[in-house]
Image 1: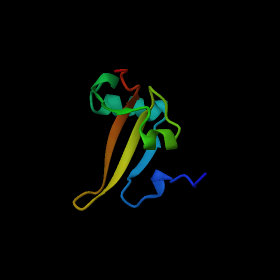
Image 2: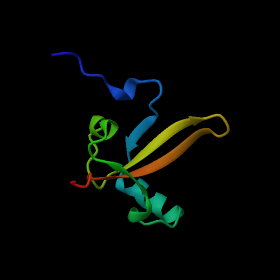
Image 3: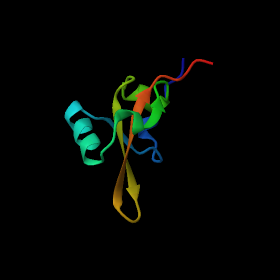
Image 4: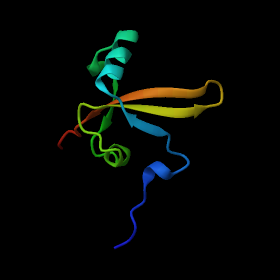
Length: 83
């Protein structure tokens, strides 16, 4: 059996963190959003699996930006629909 690749260690993968309940509430309040309005990421995404996120978690993605230094994006973890 081979060694498993840690996708988080790749240079092109931005930082992913599970947000706590207080952080999520602040995000929703500050931007006047509901959970349903957040962009989605599937529960079986390799990054989601590697940080042990589960459906209902909100993930903060921090990317390097040439103009802003850092840019944050947010995704709600959801189950992939069955075909």
